[in-house]
Image (tube, rainbow, N blue to C red; front, side):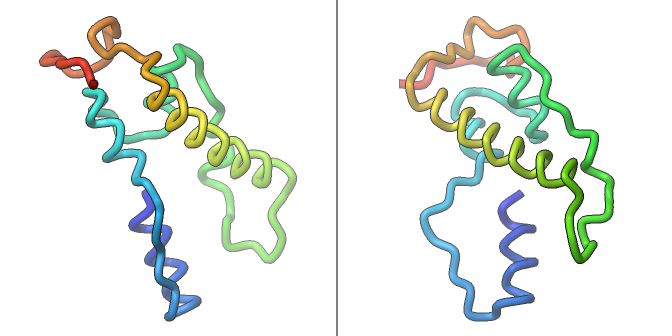
Length: 107
């Protein structure tokens, strides 16, 4: 959720003014994907599971573990991959059994 991330950053840097970002959870709705979790969105589009094992670890720690760093990198990579794939037009919601029932192809 970009909204939550931006809120947290603004607490640390009050002059923070985010621009040019895409909220993936909103973006995928144009493709009739109603799920909001990155893991589910990724699974719907690529029929493959990404690990979310580090989600509940201590993200307030002074230094992140290797596992936390890998988790964060996978999160960023997965978001970029989803976004780029949807823009290519290779995902066809009408062929997916996991999207909303009322499907209209994105043009």
